[in-house]
Image 1 (cartoon, protein in one colour):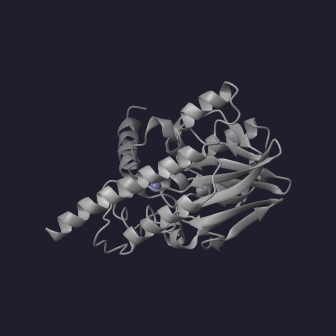
Image 2 (cartoon, rainbow, N blue to C red; image 1 turned 180 degrees about the vertical axis):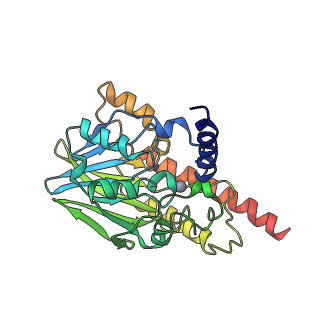
Length: 291
Ligand SMILES: [Zn+2]
């Protein structure tokens, strides 16, 4: 027994060095959140902040976002506790190719056999596990399991299953293939336009000027803001709960306000705020570059 301890110790140390450095993630990303029906056949199945959405149809279900590598069991539990089968997941979509929205994809494909459908410009990054990301290629903490894409999507493509159709809008900048999903839901005889924002955010360290690995980044962001402003939106959702103030809205929803997620004004205000943040950062970088 005693003689086995050093070898066990060595094995543990070796294992620690062999493991990729796990990114430090906020607690809200891994904290379970009660799943709930948002409108029509659309459900929230994500964590306290990392959003995942389930669209339930008679022909099987569509899942938007697989989140962290550790998230699939959490998503499975959320889906099953709503009374649906995780194994009925036929199509897997993502908001964009960053590890907090797509690291669980390989595992979800393995568990459910779902078809993975990704915007063309994010496909190389998703299939390489982030090793070729325009900004994070050298940052191991941002890498994720490489995942084979089954259908390559282009701007305006639709994804249909069992009577529900989603539209993929290329809203690039945050990644080269950031995708905003739209769909219509019927609720109390009313048609609601749903928007799941892919990400309008400029991450710390992003180069908006003279970016060698993503020369058209600023033009893409500007195009994104024009697209987002033009989308009809009743139900405002996004890749992270913080985009649309999910926690506050969920509190109202839980207390009986069934229209808590209907927020066209909040949607436009959010887009305007993010555009302002982008333009401020662009101005700062431009003046630094010409100095
Ligand atoms: Zn991201």
